[in-house]
Image (cartoon, rainbow, N blue to C red; front, side, top):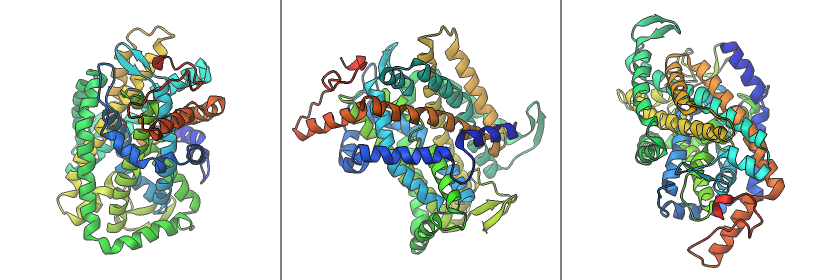
Length: 492
């Protein structure tokens, strides 16, 4: 199975040191940065202002809740284990390319979220939207929208949850030990992982039956708290070693363009793990963006653009600095050889081990349990976001095909995937997750580029919003017909 998964992974992302999909993500971010005149930088103050405005309604959640739900999808295993993997396989220079894809990807995130708002719908009393909806309405191609919806159900319902739960299982094992080995139908498994998987499944199963409102309520409390606590811990370690920080930044910049791990390896792993973490272009975050109650689509686009900074420039950078400052990392693998070997050669880069060891080296007895608890909250809220995204696309497909019991089946499948991911090996779980990210990103990025050339609806919405704000209009409004945007039925 692992061989088959790795083969598919190579096909979807592309072979070699410069994976085709990584290049596409970077090019799309650069294209939309120029198309929006770098809206992610230009309107930073407006992004912050919008976080304090807006309220929820019976049908939708507030902009801040939507930010929290999308951050619960963005801020997850990728920020802890994903950063470690980028460094372990691509070298310190991979961090630089994570920064690049974050800054450029914030423009892509703006486009996705704005499109999701323009073409959202009301379904059974709740706002629904996302790439499937805007592909159908802006491109007029239901078949292509259906491809994205099916790909997303597979990715978020089966493949991506395995990465999140696997990281929780590995962090608990790193803290408590593997326990006894038990022979099962899934192979020889750690008793610690079995118990961890059972606990996650029980809690997760309870929450996903509560709907988007319960997910939003849980996320808006937990996400800011867990991100703040993690960043405080990281900043403490960085401050204790502040004299080494200039050298670490120099190492990152030097290695981004030198052949220590190869510019291709640094670029490929930096972009790959950056996209996995911040989800810019992947097509997952627009689902939460569509659920927001806003007066103008561009408002949610700006809020979602801001979330990229929180995810990568704050949380991922904090993790990277912790790992590099403490020297708790390797670059390379036992099979390919090591460029840098600072810790045990058998330490898996596809796990939170580097991060746990980094904190443990400065705060003995605290690092392992702290990362395990932080990772539980990071990953658990991401699992909830994945369920919501998969459910939204089942609802979309159900408009054209009768699928009795489809939502119940989805809940059973995602719960099974969560347990499977918890108990299995990290490399297999990450490879499955990369397939999930890849199939969604290909379909979504091509879709939003085609939509741009068919009518530029997101750009028109941005220009309209800027014009209203420039004229001092506080109570902004959105009239799609006036802007020549078709099929935005919700806003009529």
